[in-house]
Image (tube, rainbow over all chains, first blue to last red; front, side, top):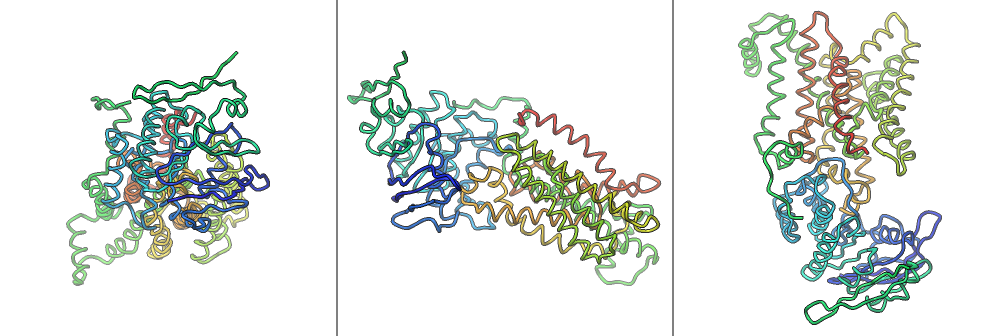
Length: 260
Length: 357
């Protein structure tokens, strides 16, 4: 599937935050969205997910305008992995993952045997079957993030939208989540749109990078977008980009901030 | 990150993890038997004791349509007084617990209940107003429903306007208290206006909560709103799980949150106000029972909702049995549930403190 954002104007009632940006995401692709705080990344996500009405422009799935889609149809095509927070009730991890099946259930139905099997497969895909009977509210932040991804996987969407999937995670868990995202895009042909505050992550997993700043929007390969100049401009930090051999003949780029 | 083998012992989390597995059939079967057992026991109990063998005989004779061999008084006590009262007890208990469980889900808040949201106080005012003005039973039901809904709407909109970024759980509970006391004040005005010779005692006694005056008429009055409220909640119970994750997450999972929330709140309020219209203010049931049920079957509404209905029906019936048999003069049911409920709420406050901060 190809999700196209066509000159989208996004914002709240009397305030326009994003003025006419266009890009697209296709299956198997990981698009990293970078940008400083308060520039409208969340607003853009809310608009793509249909939580906010577009003030102008359109969002199309394979050429079809999705503004009239029902929530159910939306959820069958586009999955959402929010930043994890704790629900008020001590659901089991398995219950939470089964909830990903809601978009495929009838209005009055509860999950069937086959829904439970799909949920089990999603847990397996992320290698967290051992968490199945744990309490969602009591596991660690990294585990919870993996559970949310697994829930989105049970939803079987073609496009996955992830709001800072690596925030609040320790270093090990950040890499674990990134490698799982990479694996999903490659193996399940899911297109991923994610935000991150770490430019390094764009080098590690994305096929393309979008840079959102007040009054501007750029999109391209990580090499073209994550440059010393751009990072200096949007974050106001003096940055050097270095190359490190990855041990298998290639290089991995990373950003090194220089603090005086 | 890999999780260790479960260690032995019974930490609270372990108690939950056991409860969280899909409850095995025997648990649900046992819960389904509870109200039936309570029903049979309650038939035999009472100032006019009916020994069990005779009870069985009467039931068999009635089913087979055989001629009556027992005294007329016994027949009257059983069919005009005791059975209607038992049926109302079961329905009121199920209605209050189910609505409490559903409110907790849509408001994403385990501390709410029909009382705390103000639904009970609103419906109580509506019913008192209707009694004062000699409305028909349908009129009493509708007025109670209208003011119950109004009170919930007040609590909901006021608290969501106030709680931006603040402690939403606490604000909702506090706003509920305000709305509750406001409608209680309105009810006091009604009492003040009421004729002290007939209306005032009627309203006062009814407000204390009880099933003392239930007849077949009350059963018929309850059964329709009970069905209209219960059926949608039962059918939509899976969606309540999703709603408890919050607006955007639920939308992202494919739930039309606006429509779903309204249907669930209206159904729950209908159940609450219908109960209050026939039995007065019976507090706490809608808070205690969903909690206890959650400890037994876990938080998944697929089983939690029907299990709460069964537990609530049994609980209220048993408390009513105590109310009508243990003491020389009958104690209003609402007083008994409050005596049981208030300490339980304090216990929850202590338990929940960590997750509030």
